[in-house]
Length: 256
Image: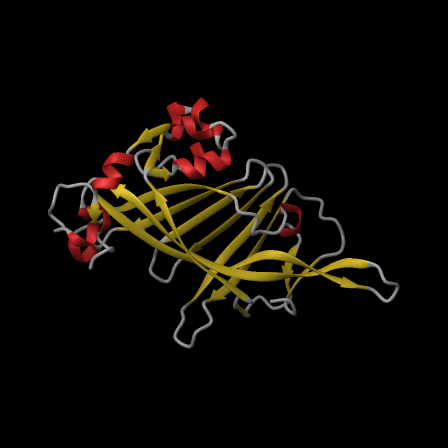
């Protein structure tokens, strides 16, 4: 919030900085969790990391240089169903401009570290269709962060032709990065509509929310009339990613 999170006025000597905050949706029964946000001036990127109240790990890197957002979800297995491992899903989308600059992120500080942060503005829920999968080792043409961030999701890194067109000026020049599943995607049913034991492809939905991020800068005017940065405006947003999986057992949380 503006009264508790502020910018240092001096220039930091490092190339990165991290802010650790307590975050909540803001409702009476909402859980509180810890979120890490950091900026890296060398790569011109911003990272947001947290473990959701449901136990999913979320690692989102916004590559401002290439205007790409990479979001990695690590979903633990359902132990009650005998699933001891975890699944990793990676999604690549175009940057929409709803984040303060990297340099400003590196200067974020808070006066009271125990305070629970609630965003000033909720920007709703976006449903992102991801009918194509990407070859991770070749997707560095989109962002150099992808091969590293998505290395555990070599068969589960997703995007769409529309998103790739927004990132690349001419996506047809890079057809080797796409494993085109559009026809299968169009024909598939929702995973929650099929038996868990079914061997059929289905559409999985993975919802997630980032309940606090610095979306715009605030400016104040001094007594002499000069304008200067004096804070941030904070936002929250939710995204539901839809993507193709081999069978309903890979999407056990998405049941009717």
